Image 1: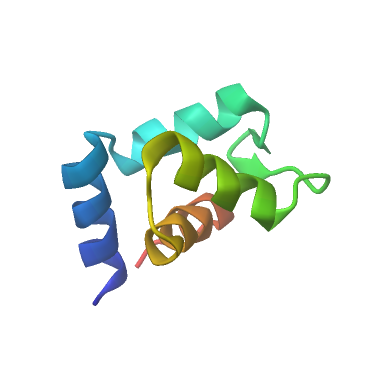
Image 2 (image 1 turned 90 degrees about the horizontal axis):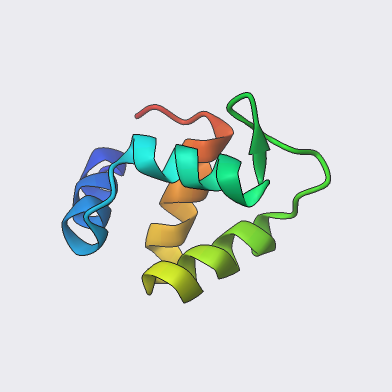
Length: 72
């Protein structure tokens, strides 16, 4: 499955766009100015996505990659 397909599936499941997840991560304090804070561990973000949005591990990792700057 392509990275874009993961993002599309996540949006279908959650109703949230990639931009929405970026904004939510900033509000949660995981990111600042579009970058993951150095004090934030990947597991914190992955656990948040699994718990709050019921994402599986692969889909949570796709959002984590998005937050790290992956574009495709």
